[in-house]
Image 1 (cartoon, rainbow, N blue to C red):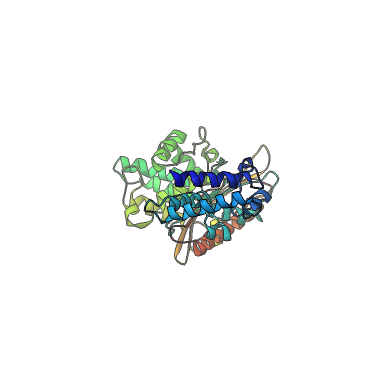
Image 2: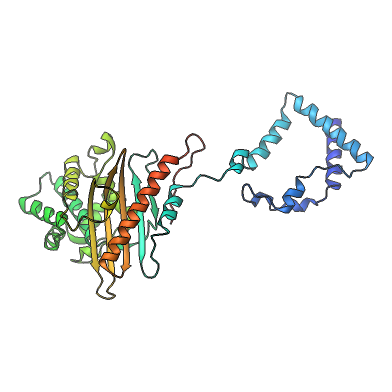
Length: 364
């Protein structure tokens, strides 16, 4: 008890003679890591330099008591030091900038691409060879009109229904599917849209495939289906699995034969419609969509698919609206695709490893 009393007396004199009153400690915990304001620098100055002799004696007594405590078996001083360490950033973290997340890197890469005005853009990308397997996105939850990219979703719904019925596609369905995907034939899309039960049938399939934000177009208007960039990545994941475990048919999803059929058609797009995600690699599978809105004359331009680069497979979804021309929208899409792949591959090369590694996060 005498030791504790002496220690408390020493601390009282210490605080009483400090240049700053105790209330100046308020708010320091909220300072950003690695930044010191004037008050904090003042607090870091050595104390006791202006203390009276009796205060010096009290401080000396407190120092002796603290030393004895540190040498004791209870480890009390060590516990106090640990609590301060946990409440502040480690020295190596303060010394260097925090690791950038993939979402932040993606947003920075798109800054030179963004058009402004009425043009809207959303991008989502997934590196299938990354350990994180997380979708990085820019405006990934924003709703966009699909135009013809909904044809991939329509085919997935048709194949799911055929699987449930234990049958293959009919010759008519197969011919329509080929025309709908490889040449973006609208009459074929009308036929298969009716076959799946229009928007209601598409929504039922999407619930099974994990597309939580996509809603089938009204009536016969499959091109007015609403979706998000992240949902399109989820659709692509159901078609382009990673690893043997994901290739096997799940109770709800597409079986390997259905997946391979969609991939085959997406890899056989006719010349003139093979723009978009193919700007990032000559090894691609894709489907594009384009639609000029009658009310505004502006263009919806979208592209989804997979691209292969050495050692990596990327699923990419780029959606846009408000483009003043079709070609201008295609240029925007292709620049966004290349920027997104570059940011993702650069992040993979420089990603920190170990316990301090930062997991990619989404930026909206």
